[in-house]
Image 1 (tube, rainbow, N blue to C red):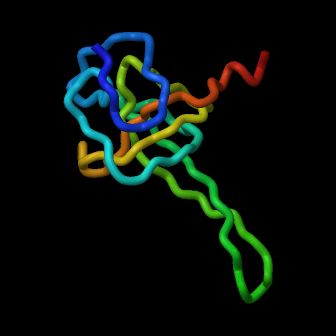
Image 2 (cartoon, rainbow, N blue to C red):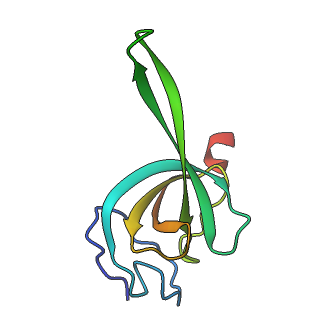
Length: 114
């Protein structure tokens, strides 16, 4: 049974029994929603997501790139890999460094190579 999480995202086709999954478990999403690129998936059920933004430097009247990294829970039904563009949503703290969960894969990494 897939439940509505309150965001306009496409629910995953696969089922999972993860209690920390916002679609099949009892995890609620709230707060900020970001889009970023997965840079690491070596941890168990966790991915590192990189978000790039432009910051204006008034002294030089130019923009510089700034990068933020977030650790996000990766439910088995979603299964994001390195290079995927994903949408992550804020949730309660899941561990010392994790406060986000992957809710949708916007673009797969292997789709660019084809």
